[in-house]
Length: 308
Image 1 (tube, rainbow, N blue to C red):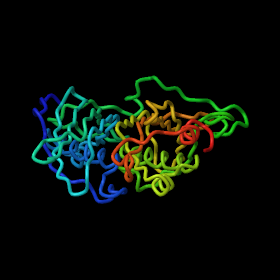
Image 2: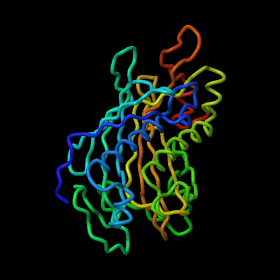
Image 3: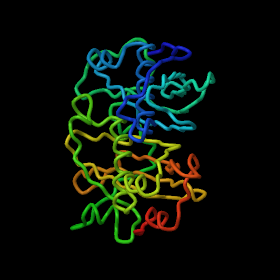
Image 4: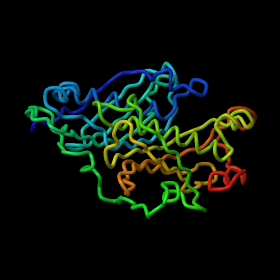
């Protein structure tokens, strides 16, 4: 597999209506879905598409790391221009842009790492064309900066991951087949969905749900940065244990949060994915409309471990 990638791929697309949860603004998850669409187009431009790779060569295409910055809003009905450029054999850069008053405006800048996973039992020849690394197991892409956590006799998952006094929030969830691909495991996009949901559950658990802040304060959620990285495979119908923790309050207007995902295998809690999100709120009504909301003492206390 030695063919040099093309200089770049351009895809034009529109965000799905599902992503317009607050007025006509598109949420961060659907920015990342557009990135995935563009990356799949890049694969098609460089050789066999994802279907052919899997059926004819036994190779499963995986996004294993995607980090995005969101410098401007994306709205329903926007036509997005996605540009994909190869930075290395397994790394791509993506830029999403829209037209605003005749000007080209960048709404996303992203970095993506991709691999091909050889499916178990597949003995098919590798394709001529796509210059991507092939791994035998998704765990091979981990950088080794995470280690499994052994449970002590009688210790529960909750006690191990969010012990008494911990600021973390735990959500345990059975992975359904409709979050999976290739009849087996959860892809990167599934963990993006999990990141969105665990933040929502965390905020509700702390008494500052999205609905409450919308109703009482006219605060609109804003995400300016997000990253999701896969560490090991998670298979269909396994139980995923997700811990979300606020790690920092930035300038009194944003909070930095971390997601860590584990699967229990025997007496080990195996790290399978991690994510980060930079989250704040814009004010939608009143004299301060359009500005970032200041996180007052009650909200900050709720985010960092107490109840408002």
